[in-house]
Image (cartoon, rainbow, N blue to C red):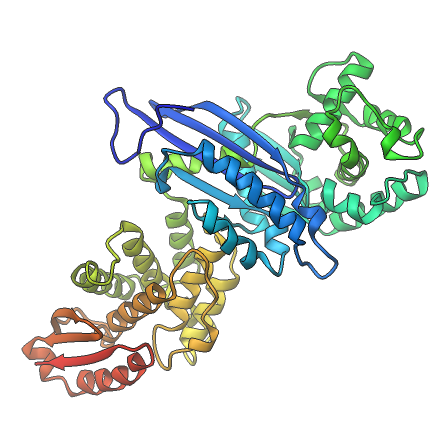
Length: 507
């Protein structure tokens, strides 16, 4: 791959280059593209089998062997991403790294050999991005159901046009179910039935709602579904990319003529997928039965395409789904918009003055601070007492489309500490953010709230300066004459001392 350009410079011919990498439980998928007049044109696709999910123990610890496989695949991806800037690449990790208790070990070691941030996303976020990938690349825009069987989880999404209506992520995948039901390679009707029952049980909480949606089009994505579709087409000489429930039953019957997966040698299926096809087949049968589906059609686009469209829209179109999420949360919890705006404006005013010495010049820092200001009072819907804790809890546990798990944890930590005593013992362990930067953002949000305690547009602060570990505030005459403000700042100085910051006030 050559001629990769930075998005910081729009080329004369209007091209922009982007890449998405999906660290799945079965395979790592990389796709690079260029955007021409808002059209995404694929350039390179690269897939590496990793089987991360097979290295997840019963106690949800990733084995050293699985970690090594993942790191080796990341090195190959890094070679193919040479020349890309950080803002051109978005990397998402799914079910296995969501579940792994030692995911931090993998991420730390990955950072040594892979130069791009890795975002672990929730199951709902994975489902949303899968739907977006399908919706953006499909001509049909009515009511549809999208099914994606991955290595560790299965995502099912009901939506209409570009809008997902129901998002479901269930803990069943072709690799995880292979480990659970077919690990020794033996096949039998009894084992297959156990896998089928487990999958149907996993679907039970979401099946009724999905059935009631009455989708007109049913789409299947992922390697498992594509492999089964190829199997069906070669065997039955049927229409390409279509799987009927009747054809699926014939696949089950054909599979169970074997007593061991090693003897299954279906030519239509890649050899490296033979070992997980029994589990994948069981999951797909369960999905079609529980949702009462008679057929589905395969589609090439999935998670990585959804990531690409979102990244391109964020960088080129300046439309960010995360902003819509924040706006929606503020409306849902009836935030005082004027107060949120006052706090945001003060926070940005402070940030502009300290950005260079505190190394917070990137626009993303301003964006995060504005988001925190916008939703810092959502906890009022619960109780004004311990407001910051309630707000932090809501943000930590809400479904927040567009945010990775770590971005959400960062925002929750900011809001949880915007007033009263700092809860340093509850600060999350973060991989994508330096602890020092989190502390500094907390300081700015706390000061922005403090200077707007009266909930009026009062001019109390003239400027803020950084002098090594000292933060020097220069107040206006009005601010210097405000005894409540001076008292609040004296108390605030004690809290900031816990962060190693010497807060001083000049009139």
